[in-house]
Image (cartoon, rainbow, N blue to C red; front, side, top):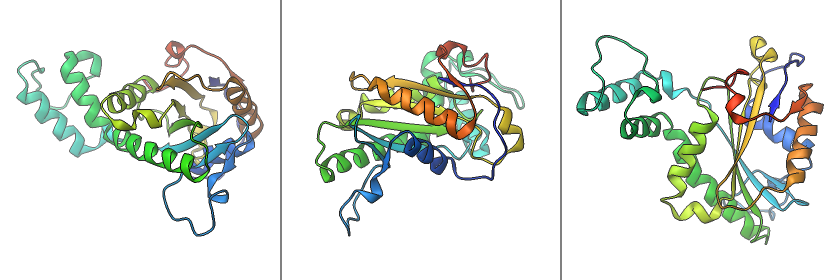
Length: 241
């Protein structure tokens, strides 16, 4: 889903809280209010009771692509591999410019935060299924990211890379990636498009009504009209590559 531009200015809030408020407007209930009094264990963020969805929201707040330490690690990795490019000085290299195995290693390094959050989300969702006695609830992992951090397909690849090797695979059913500048308090971000994409993990379909409710809530809270677009057109509309 791509949300068209136009939104009035707003004060900065953390993007996790911003997306949680949109989810509540779409009919979600904060799980903190549903767990038994005194419960201190793991829990996810939002329950969509009618749709049977438990959602855990993860926000990407750091830009590892521009972290000098990450850049140094990537440079050393490329220098050690005979298939790596020969680099003189400072250059920008896209993943598509690298051999497949190096591109995957580089993406794992840049997306290290994403990889760590996948396992955490699986545990939170599974614990919430237990505490709410909803063993069949759809487990939805949500990543929200400011623009230009890491693209939808890269996040989806990283999540799949983790779950296909992990016991946490059975705990997650779907992935929702949301890219938006809203909630950051950045005046330039007010006119930027927002993007969301859904990816399957377990093969279970995401309840269709959920997307409809989320789109309506987004329009009401942001003044960005929601419309459907192919993921392949996201970059043309301003999404991260």
